[in-house]
Length: 123
Image (cartoon, rainbow, N blue to C red):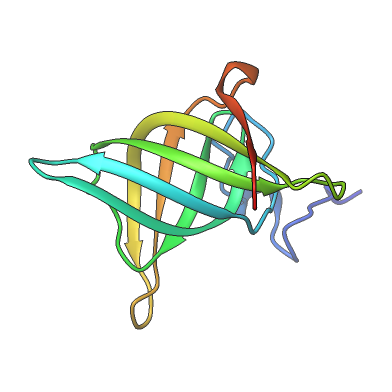
C-alpha cells in the first residue's frame, strides 16, 4: 500500500518536513507594521497566512531580517457594530522574499494572544 500524501504526487521521501509547530490559517487581512532600524518606519500590507506564533505578510516594503517588528492585524467586526478588532504581535522578522515587481513578503515569529486584542470603533 502506498503512503498517502496531500502534496500532489510526491512520495513521502520527497515531502519537505513541516518546521512550523502551529496551524496556519490562510487569511487575507490588512495589516499595519512598525519597526525601527535606526529610524522609525510604519508600512502596510496584507497577511497571507496567520498562526498563533506568527504571520506571513505581503507588502511593497519589508523590514530587514532579524529586526524587531510590531504588527497589527485588522479584523472587521462580524456584525454591524462598527467595531474593528486589532490583534497585535511583537516579534522578529525571520525571512523576507522579493517577488515580481514591488510585491515582497516577510515572515514574523511572535505570539498572538488574548492580551493583544484591541477593540476600536470605526467611524
